[in-house]
Length: 349
Image (cartoon, one colour):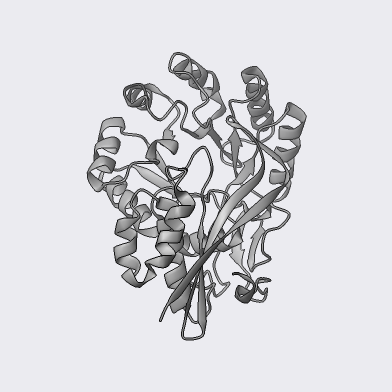
């Protein structure tokens, strides 16, 4: 008989990381452990408080319910957990982990064989100008050819100066720049601000305004000279019909897919199929999971054959992450099969 349990784990950032929503110093996550016939599987429910659709007072209660009803099986649980996308993701992972020969190799491929890698962007967190500049230089030195800057928290003119300094040294063929506003711009000034950075050959801007202003977002996607990517706007959109309606109405150039926020692998594949039908581009991003969740997302992402840089470089952010085979080298994410996981599933209870 299958047994299921869950527990909470707090990840601590190596240094406080800034977004337009504030400063992050630690990150709560939850794990589901499955046990059957002497084997164990692990799944991560990567919730981000203040942002995830399932940031609700009954979250832990739902985890308890899930473990108590594990006998329902993965499919039925996934359907029942439609309003809890991070638990859907944890359940998918845990079942795959339990079935796998190695609990951490969920999708065997050339990636897990260490013969192929995934191109990723280097993430630059918000902070004062000197801090952001140091991060940019560091990412370029590390060999990244695509960097993503969180913008919208410091003075906009200073952010423009940062973009100017990158472009003074590197053209768009050498360094691709993505910017992520995390809904920081207002409806009134968004187009004006986007226009001011158009000359810096920006690849795309993520979520310039609040997700609820769909009419304005639609107008921005029509009028902006920089391609727009939806991110937060996908959170809390649960049914296939709602997803289709949203993408048809807004017509973004890209969508950014975070499995923890959108119903795991199944939810991600549904968004991809709708986007591709509408000629909308996409890439996959982690949502500050531990290396357990990041590993699962990376293995899944490799199989989707999207050659654009993906947002999977967050493994080194925490002081108490789990050592694992994931390694970043020259802007590529590798699975180094010679490196072991430093995590014992028997310690999780």
